[in-house]
Amino acid sequence: MNNFGFFHKLGIKYPIIQGGMAWISDSSLAAAVSNAGGIGMIAAANAPLEYVRQEIRKAKELTDKPFGVNIMLLSENAEEIAGMVCEEGIKVLTTGAGSPGKYLKMWKEYGITVIPVVASVALARRMEKEGADAVIAEGGESGGHVGELTTMALLPQVIDAVDIPVIAAGGIGDGRGIAAAFMIGASGVQVGTRFLVAKECTVHQNYKDRVLKAKDIDTVVTGRPTGHPVRVLRNKLTRQYEELEKAGASLEELEKLGAGALRKAAKDGDIDSGSVMAGQIAGLVKKEQTCQEIIEEMFEQVRERLTALDYAGIVE
Ligand code: TUI
Image (cartoon, rainbow, N blue to C red):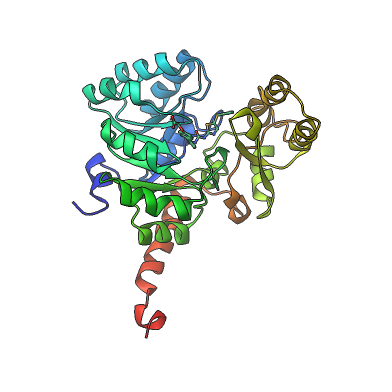
């Protein structure tokens, strides 16, 4: 099996997974990505079980291609959602913000392809041992909950440490980033921020406009003291957060400021007091397109990059 056999086996045309984005990636975005030849993911995030089930059922109406669910392991509903996806016949799962170890056996019994997000070599190794089918090596360039390492440093170290396919994530927004990930040895990529502004993405228009006007240096990581570092676009909320941190606020006060903030930005469009999670690649994202346009443009760039490689021009 070559590097890309993993995706072909799943019946997917392009080796690209849409990152699960809390309060953002619903059935509309997931089905559009799957219809365009990638794998769309519904983000379970902190949502109630019945909401996630309804989104799964809506996606089944919108596409006959495989799509998946992203399970956010910090959610108090993670356990019951972990069981529900088995009943609903979901074929692909990604997980984030923790270790899915205790669910792996059950998911494998249901024949689900399980792809945990990892931010370290140690967790990648553990996931392989416990039966994961692949891992997503996600660098801290990505939006939302982040680890410490960059994609450029994490990806080759994870690839050397495991024998299962490794999918690259964090800082990938166009075909150049995808080609670079392939050069390092990734079997596929996960992209979030670029899909945030997709026409089929139902996030509030204010959120999309904020991403479209973001510059390279506009994201910051907040929440390090709480143990849940999160990359977001700088705004009134992040300035308040920084002031509270400097003043030595308690963890409770910091958590309180963050609670419900993502919903405020994503659903109500309050991009000043809400949490506008986005990756460092936001500065590269300049236009709204359909998922099909995004994916086809990216893989055309991959083709151009890979055919333009001229080894003789680099090394005499
Ligand atoms: O999960 C994500 N990104 C997310 S989750 C999210 S919702 C949220 N909102 C507020 C606070 C916290 C979460 C928004 N964005 N990405 C996948 C990811 N997982 N990145 C890093 C990790 C990770 C980090 C440490 C996974 C495992 C881990 O260690 C677990 C262990 O047991 O070693």
